[in-house]
Each structure stands twice: as C-alpha cells, then as structure tokens.
Amino acid sequence: MRLALPAPLRSLLFRGAGSAMVSGFLVVAVFTMVGKIVSFAKDALVADKFGTASELDAFVLVFGYLTFVCSVLGCGIPEAFVPAYAELRERRGLRRAYRLGVQANACHFAALLTCGVVLALAAPWMIAWTTKGFDPAKQALAVGLLRGLLPFLVFFGLSMHLGSWLRVGKTFLLAASAPMLVPLTIVIFLLLSGDQLSAWTLVYGTVCGSFAHLSVVAFAIARRLPRRLSWWRCTLRRWEPGLRTVLRNATPFLIGGVAFGSAAVVDQAMAAWLPAGSVAVLGYSDKVCAVVLAVTAGPASDVLFPHFAELVAQRDWSGLRRRLFTSAGIIVTASLPMTLALFFMAPWIISLLFERGAFGPQDTQRVAEVLRCAAFQIPFYILGIVAARVAVSLQASRFMLTTAFSALFLNASLNWLLMRQMGAAGIALSTTIVHCICAFATCATCLIVIRRREAASA
Image (cartoon, rainbow, N blue to C red; front, side, top):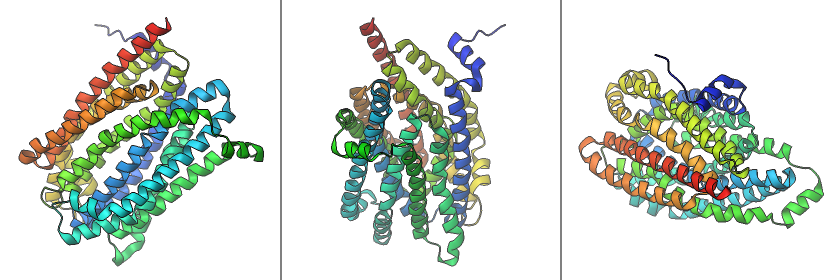
C-alpha cells in the first residue's frame, strides 16, 4: 500500500538542504551537537570529580536560579525584540532596525544589572527559604556561590539577546557555535585545578566562559553596525519609536517567563527536600534529555522564529499555518526514536556517560530511574516550543500568561503528589505531563488566532 504524504511535507522533503529554513536547521543542529559533546565532556569530568556530592547539590541549585533569571529576561525583551526588529527592517530598512537593536540591548543590560543587585542582597533569605533540606553550612556555601556567579547572569543574559539578534539576521553559525565556549572553559579550569578542586572551580570557569561567549557575539554584532559618528549620535539621542512596542510587549512575556520558566527552579527546590544528592540526580537526567532537545527543539526554535516573524510581518497566514504543521510534524517524528532509546537504554547510557570516579553504580541506578520518566517530555516539549514561537510572533501575550501560570501551578501540584511516592522520578514525570498539556493547548490557540487573522485580512 502506498503512503501519500501531505503536499507541504512532501515539498519540504524534496527541497531538502536547498531550503534556507532546512539548511539553517542543519547548521544549528550540527554545531549545537558539537557544543553538547563539549558540554558532555564537561559533565563527565564533573561527575568524575564530584559524583553526587553535597557540594555539587549547592552549585546545581544556585546555577539553576541564575539560568532561570536569564531565561525570564530572555523571554521578555529579546523575545519581543525579534518580531519588532523583523517588521521594522521590512518596512523602514536596516539602519532603523540596527538602532532598535542597540537601544533594546541597552535596556536588557540595565534589567540584568538591576536583577544582579537584587539577587546579591536577597541571597541569604532566598537560599534559606528554598533549601529547607540543606544544613546551615551547605546553605552558607550556596549563598557564596550565588553571589560569585552574578557576573555570569549579566554576561550570559546579554549573550542571549545578541544571539537572538544574530539569528533574526539569519547568522545561525556563530549563534550556534559560540555557547560551547562556556563548557570548554569549565573543562580547562577543572583540568588545571589539580588538588585545589572545589565548587568554586566551577564558578570561575562558568564566569570566564560566559565572558568569552559574550565577547565573540558582541564583536560579530559590532562589525555589522554603521561606523558613522552621526548614526551613533542619533541612536543615543533619539529613541526609536519601535522600542516602546518592544518594552510594552516584553512585559507580558516577562511575567509569563517568571511562571513558565520557574518550573525548573521549582523542581530543583522541591528536589532539595528529598534525600541528599537528589538535586544533582535530577540535574544529570536533565542534561541527557537536553542533548536530544539541543538537536531538535533548540535549532527548530532558533531557525523557525525569524521565519515565523517574517510571515506575520508579511500577513501570510496560510504560509504560517502550513509552516507550523510541517515543521512540528518533521521534528516530533524525528525525536520519537531518540525518546524510546533513552527509555530502554537509560542505565547503559548513564553508565557510559558518567559512571567513573566518584560516580558509582548506585548513582547510575538513581539517575536512570529519573531519566526514564523524563524522556517522554521530549516530543511534547518540541511541539510546545515550536508552537510557542508562533504564539510569540503573533504577540498572543494574554494566552502566554494564562498558560505560564497554569503550568506553574500544575507542575508544583503534581510534584507534591508524585515525589512522595516516586522521589525525584516523580518530579520528572510531573514535568512530562505538564509539557504534554501545554503543547496541545498552545497549538490549538495558535491555529485559532491564525484563523481569526486570516478572516480579518479577507
């Protein structure tokens, strides 16, 4: 029996790497995979040196807090910046779009700096409130590590913004390859530390690596900008009207990012209530899932977002719907074999990647149990992230807020119910259920909004 593929899917497969979208996806996927190989070398070295030690628990927890803040701010100004930049470039030209980029980046820097100062002051209270299972010495270590990592907050946050600027300009190669400087620098610090190894070694490597990442992407952006003094005077003196749109649209995404992005922080904080090492166990499982997401959801999000924004700016509603269906179908189908492989081969994969030095067979078993529950979040996460990019391009801020707060409440509730019986594996299963519900809700809402826009245009 002959299988008939839908026309959009057949057309995309026939074009293959000749399509700009598919070519961009392949570039991002390849270099993201290389970056993940470097990151896994770092994780294997950390597992060898620390295992699931209490000291690593503290670092993973505070690092998760700071990446959460970066992701929240990254879901605000950078997310609102991309559609506004694409529309301004389409209607007013590159110089006006560049001016918007510089001013939006300055606002993002101010927001990151303000958050850093607030976190430095609130660190003791925040750590004491969220780490009920830590002893006082471990809490004091966590406070020190959090303050030591604050430069990473600024460097990495700015790198996210500049990376989105590169991607909206279809410069995917550098945006995908530069992040590997962070794990590479951490590996160098771990190898050079010798007998002086501690959690502070990870802090110094993370801060220096994020600074190197920022330097590379900032240099790439600076080379594109006009060098005339008159343009810079105009940029610094006259605010681009589109900046108001960016800041206005960023507010709902910031609030939504707090709710939706805090799921990982809630998971880690609740894992801190479980037996020692549970935060690290959950972290190792997340790193393995992140490899699959890095070559599917990550490239799909980076490459498709500029295309979605352009289709919205051009009012091509049928093309937007067709691209959503085609992209989601291909990426989710490609992720299913990897998901099943993670489920059935979890103990072998964890043993191969981490079981050496301080990381023993018992640690392998604990992480494998969590990984089996976490693996099934992958298809739903990919579907949700692709649909979310369409929602952001459509500026469906009200829906994003509703979904984010609903997901936060559901995630915390399911964590509480499942972790009491299953431990850290229950937290992973809760995440899978939440991603499943959010993915289908986001897809349905995007299709409804597109249909309404299409009817209004007609």
